[in-house]
Amino acid sequence: MRNDLPRGWVWTTLGEIGRYHNGRAFKSSDWSEVGRPIVRIQNLTGSGSKFNQFRGQVDPRHVVNHGDLLVSWAATLGVYVWRGPEAVLNQHIFKVESHVSPRFHRWLLESVVADLYRQAHGSGMVHITKKKFEQTPVKLPPAAEQDRIAAAIEEHFSHLDVAERALAAADRRLHALYRSVAVDAFDRPDWDWTTLGEIAEIKGGITKDSKRETDPEFEEFPYLRVANVQRGYLDLSDVTTIRADPGKAQRLVLRAGDLLFNEGGDRDKLGRGWVWEGQIEDCIHQNHVFRARLLDDGFDPYFVSLHANSWGQRWFEAHGKQTTNLASLNLTTLKSFPVPAPSLQEQRGVASRLRSALDSIQHQRLELERVAVRASSLRRSMLAAAFAGRLVHGDSQKEPARQLSAVHRDA
Image (cartoon, rainbow, N blue to C red; front, side):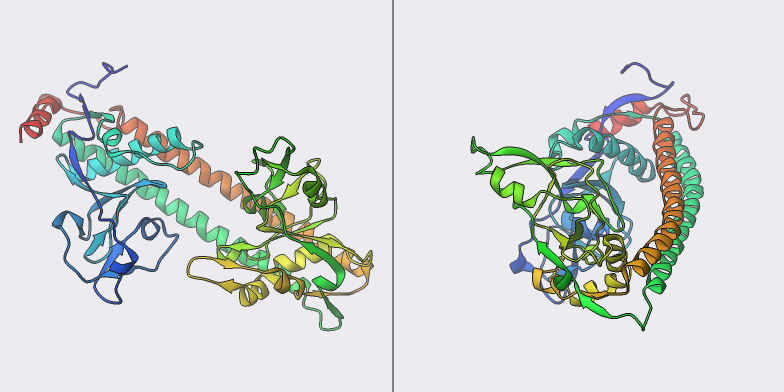
């Protein structure tokens, strides 16, 4: 209820408690080898560490200084504090000019943007207009209470930060152990070797074509995407469908025992995959996922896939094609992937021992993920409590928020 407010708090909007300056629409022709870095969304999220630079003049509202509060509002919704040198701001990011405590404003935005993301998630590209953003209603406490709330949040979150860093370190150790155990299993100089192309028929998947999907002759088929094909397992929690020509689709239907390999994306996705076990009837695969169907009964699919996910990871990284933002494998490269060829009995023994060891490691990693999810939930709960007035005790007699809000509306 909008009247459900702690004593001394008022309802207001994001637009009333600050100004939000959108970045400049830099073109590739504006980029330079020298000058101030251009802050793009990927530089804030960590998905891209390379900065383009700009050496010209910009409007002061597009200049970003250390400590400035930024909000990405298209493709990715997020709140960030800039910790770099003086820079210039790209479009689709707001620079925040606060009319309230900047510390409080930062955490209020964290809470609001998380809610906006949950509302927008699943509806296509995540995007919010400036008008809708500024009209978002928020609860505002008195000025002195704003800093106390921010301090309480920061104290609680500092403990969570320590715990999450420990979780990340534990996950890195498990990942290193996974690699070590798996690579050691295939370090056998006495084995003969062949190539994947010699022992399997390799085929690319179907290409999505929205224009042809309206064809009345087409039928609906479940199909696997890159996100479904993980390293050492298949994530089938979100399998989508595609309309396709039945004849073409039937030639791509997966069979139990088929090996799946990712074509690429990020470099660490190259060649990752697992064995299809027939979990979904008439399932096909997209063009960014390769299917390898073994031609020789002398090879165990789990042995080959475990080899590809361990020893093969560095091979794929070394032999894949790298562009500015993407890495990829082509069919010729995948066919040339080296595969050890011990006896079938030895393959099955190695695969059985390795799967047992890796299942234990994966179980530990899943436990870490569950703890991380609980930590994230705890952060949301703390923010909800903070902006419902339940995290600290206020003193509304000293400076009611209504007076503060009025000052800024009249400024």
